[in-house]
Length: 133
Image (cartoon, rainbow, N blue to C red; front, side, top):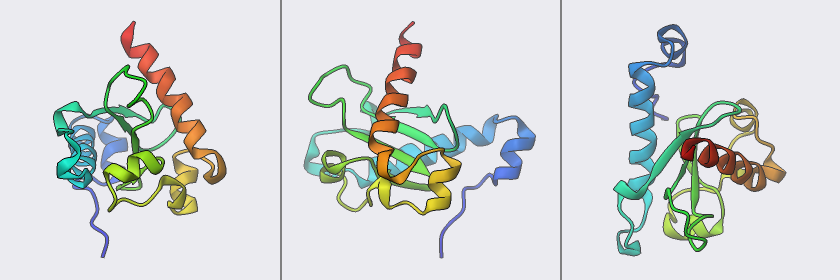
């Protein structure tokens, strides 16, 4: 049985994305952090989370400009974490790939299964750029 976030979607809509959204953000970060292999050398403090600018969910990366880690990205969609690509999945092998998410979840996040990697990386670049200004 799938667990639901503590704050249901209707509460988020009514509350204007206040306290409940912070709980869900923390839940998203924790779910990715707990899936990352202990021997990876990464800590949860390195993870940075951004709201999906085009739909539901969150984009999570290492908040680094380092070219070697730029594509280590996870997404949190429909209350569940996903590795964006093979490199991210190697660090978090218990997570499915984002392209394996149910069609309805992808639709709410405004991603297409066949282009999700490119779409997420493009959106993430835009979000990163806007937060550095």
